[in-house]
Length: 136
Image (cartoon, rainbow, N blue to C red; front, side, top):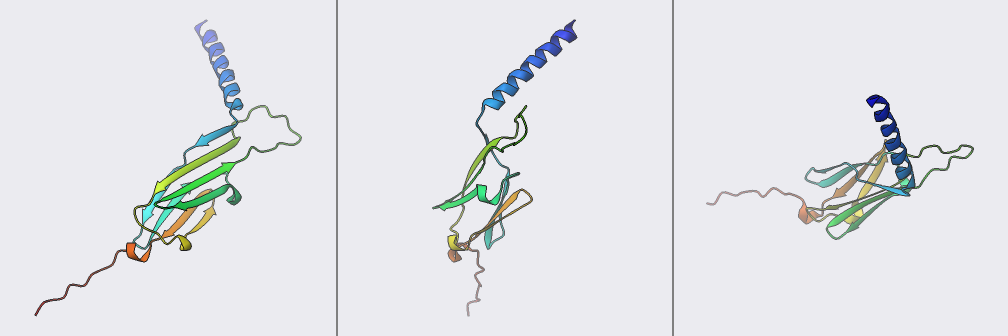
């Protein structure tokens, strides 16, 4: 008896969750990132699975770099949609830069669902070795 009641209750919750999720027009998502510094440049790697190059925007404003991506809902011609868990998606990440960068030399690439942004440091922000001279 308990098992039947439990199964019916779970089916009800599943139906409610599907209906609620289907009603969301756009799902917001955080993306996992790695933020690296190799001395000459900062490198940001961000997971953007399923995003196309045309759906990604990178903006540099002052001390921040902003990654935006938006996937529009897909059209399923010839099919009746019975469940939509992979619909429109929007993500935004804003990252504070620890130093000045050369904004004109920034480059980005998208490969296998990973966006990699190379942010070369401005000359004055790069580390440099100072030679120590012996005094006479």
